Image (tube, rainbow, N blue to C red; front, side, top):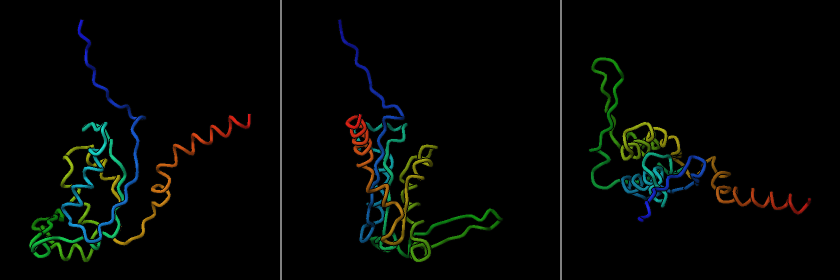
Length: 161
């Protein structure tokens, strides 16, 4: 008799999420955004499933110091529409980096995620800051300690009893 192979799938409570901090200082826009997209989807984990939210939270600092190659600063154009007739607005990458460097990285990562509800949910796990400071120090430092602290707390309670 042959043994049947079964596929193991994680449940929602079994998924572990970590916090990743990436420094964009001197990194190329496209290479950084592909790395961030893979981290958001969870492709770096051995339990990756494309239909589940497996990815980590990603914090990008120094977004204003991102670099691009070639003539993209003047050639790359971002389009948006106001909703009115003839309301197509164009913004060059150079102007976008000067005004809102966070938006440049968010749009680059957004373009590398699949077009579905899960990707829109994953974009909420991306935090981009134009300077070196971010308000997520507690999450980043405590990500690995949470589980061990919880286990240590239960061990201390059992010793008291």
